[in-house]
Length: 237
Image (cartoon, rainbow, N blue to C red; front, side, top):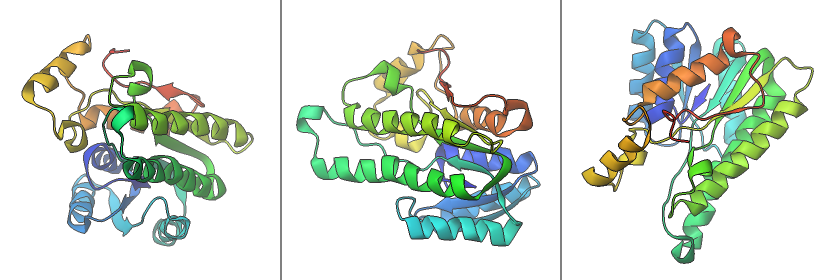
């Protein structure tokens, strides 16, 4: 299951997992056309996939998402929670309505999804959440977003320990500057080039780069990695 699977990093992850032979449930919030396009790409990659709409912060809809996965494919082995929201502004000027919406998706949404995963994931499975390398970088204007993702890191570490005895690994991936629509929105060419140049590898990440990290953590090869934050950012921090 990949929430936020209709675009960006989530969509790249759907494609990567489908290519590795996973049957994938593409969770999406509203854009059915994009979700169906992600399903089409997964099928073309040789996998099986379906799209299911769910608001990640709504516990009933998320429960139904898991039920749909169990009904369609027999159970859930991997949960990748890639759905998220980003709003940028200085803390002194931040609109509290935006703060509430941001935290509803990023904090409550993560909690609801991993709560269901904790109760319904099969033994030997994997949970991958999403943080951000901004937790370490602390750029101006990212305060509210960083606060939400620091919360994600905290709950991820706790859940890894609470699932002792279940043979389920739980990790967070923290991308750096990655060329997604959400990242590029509102940035001019100079800003994009400056951010790309900060990493020693001197480029922006791609959704496919991050999908590879997720696929590793979800695979048997990555199962011994547990309770960690993987900063996939080209060496920026």
